[in-house]
Every structure is written in C-alpha cells, then in structure tokens.
Image 1 (cartoon, rainbow, N blue to C red):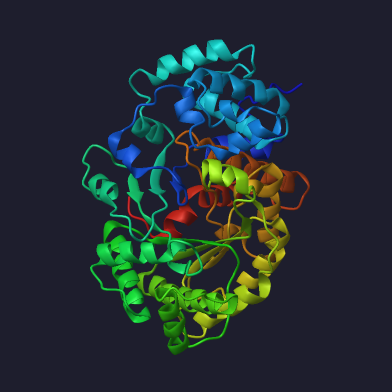
Image 2: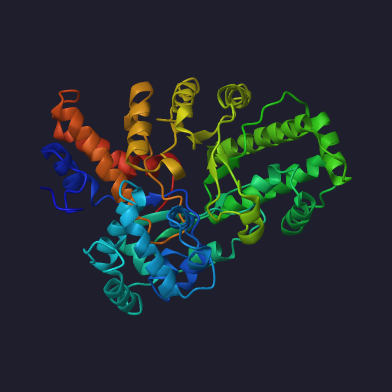
Length: 468
C-alpha cells in the first residue's frame, strides 16, 4: 500500500517519478497571478501563529468550514486564533478528495516538517510545533518565498495604487526576488457600479489629469499604465463579470461617459459599449508596451447578499457562472487583431464547460512569432484541483500546443500557497508518465524533461519577458 503523501505522492509510474524528481522539483517559480500583499513582503512580516499564516483571508478554507457546519464565529468572527485553528483541524477529516486536504498537508510537510495527518487529535501538538517555528528565525515572509524557490511575483493592483511597496522592494538590496505590479483596471470598466465617480476622483488625483471627458479618462489610464511599466509591470489582469462586446464609436462612448458623470442612468447596452471601447483601448496599450493581458471569465460573485453586507466581498460566497463567452470574446479579440493590436493574452474561465470554446478560439489568433501567444489559462479557483488541472492540460494538448503552456499560478492570498506549484507539477509529470506507459508518447527522457522544465518555469520566463 502506498504511504499517504510520501515523496512519490501522485506519481504512480517510473517515468512520472523520474520527471518530477529530476526535472520538475528544482525548477524555480514565477507566480504571475496572486493576491498577496507587497507591504507584507517589504515589512518581512512575521506571523503570530499558524492561524495568522493560514486562515486570515483564505476564503477557500472558509467555504470548506462552512460546508461542514462550523459557526461563523470560528471562521471570520471573534473567537481566538487557537479556536479557529482547531475548527480547521476538525474540518479536515471531512475533506477527503478536496484539494485543500492535500494542500494543507503539503504546506505542513514542506515548511514545517510536520508529517502527521491534521485532525482534532493531532492539532494541539501541531499548533505548538508550527508556532514555535514561526516565532523563530527563518520563517518570515521573505524566508518562505526564498524557501519556495520563487523568482518573481506579480501582485494584483488597482490603477490608483501608489505602488509604494513595489518601489521600495525594487530598491531593496537584501531581497533578490522580483515583486512586480499587475494592472487590474476592473473599477475603470465599472461605469455601472456604485462608487465609479469616487474612483474617478482617485484616478484624477494620482494621474494628475483632470477627468471631465472620456478622452481625459483614457489619458489618465495611459499615464498609470506607463507608471506601472516603469515600476516593472508587464501583466494586466481583468476580472470580467461577462465578456462585453457591442459595436460603438468613440463619439458614442464620450456621450455615455458624460451621462455617467452627470449622474444619469446608464443602460446595459451603453454599459457594454463603454466596456468594449475601453477594453479595446487598453488592449492596444498593452500591445504597445509588450504586456500580457489576462482575462478571468465566468465567476459569479457575492451570491449571498446577507453575508456580503456582514463581511464584504472576497469572503467565500462566489460561484461558477455560465454566461455566454464564445461570440463576444471572438469579436473582442478580432477587433484588436484587425488593428494588429492584439496583445499576448491568457484566457481563463471558471467554468470548465468553456474550455473547448476558449481552446479553439485561441487557435484563431496565434502567430506573430510568439509561441503560445494566446494561452488557455491554468485551472483556476474552483477548478485548480487534480481533475480540473488534468482537464485543462488535456484540452490544451488536444486542441493546441501543450509544449507552449506557461504553467501554474497560485491565485492566492497566502504565502504558504507555493506548494500548489508542486501539486501541479506532480500532476503534469503523472499525466506525461501515463501517456508513456500507454504508448501515447515516446519514452524520450530529453523530450519529456524539456516539456516539464518549460511548463514549470521556462515558458513563463520567456512569455512574460521578466528580468531576474
């Protein structure tokens, strides 16, 4: 019988074992999409305890705890950190088959050399051991990043962000890992959202551009893009409630923008026109700067209105959406391609039913001398489990070029989440090993090793053009 999560965890054949231990394991990490705090990196935060490191802000774990009936007091409420940790430990035995079960134990093993299975029974001793390590030297945020062999991190940053801590980290002589901003202009597209005018005021202030017209709004966005670029930004990221596309003109969008500034109601058609034209403008600028555009599609956010009022967004009440993607995304990409202004683009959907649509659509816009210019994004959020990762990679292999894939990301708020790259790499090696065992791929160690190294790290380094 195989030992639980031993050194060959998820690897069931000779080829997979060889590929993981001799090619994947030592490859560095580029975490090109995450939600960690650049301030905490600069401050080199020392965690109070494992709850601070593990459970503060981790809505993945919060959802699981709610699913097994844990009272909210022990999740986001006023209970002690020890009580919250115990609530997580009591949740664990009910999560077999959930990736959180594997991630939790990978993090315990890799960072703290804890090989016991977490449960209510083992939790007190694990609490003491892990907290004693966290209180000592070698377990601050920067230490964890270094131990994880991370070379570059892309955080998620609003266009109005000062990038204060990115600038400080850029000049930091005692920390070699690159921390780059990623441009996240969701609020720039949210003409229909409450607070849009207030956000415009912030944009005007930081860009030093008076925003009274749509042209001035675009000028302010361009200034912020140039600023992000100067700080090292090479990636933009959009969370799209839906993929907008409506034919329009700049004259029409100017009128829509003016209506919004005057406090007039905006129709859904007008909203789509504004979003379409602004996305087209941004896409053109990304191309000019040599950036990559990431589109995160089909998340349905804040389903539980009562809990939204109590806790705010990003607290574990989101789900998979099923909005139509193929037609509007095709038209949006084509509108940029027609002007020779389509940037490198990564297409993610939270709904795996979209994989074939995205994978065939991206094949229509490849080329330009860039390997994998349009990417089928890694399995993300609700689908970054074993089956989701396999489905994403097999879809890419069936319909595109797996060898050009830029690999995994954490999409996390936790500094202990880099083990998700290990999880992904083990699954990749196992998939390739199975293909070899079945005679579907040649037993060519050099070829397979190249695949693993490229997908784990080298493709991303080349694709994003990051300097280390």
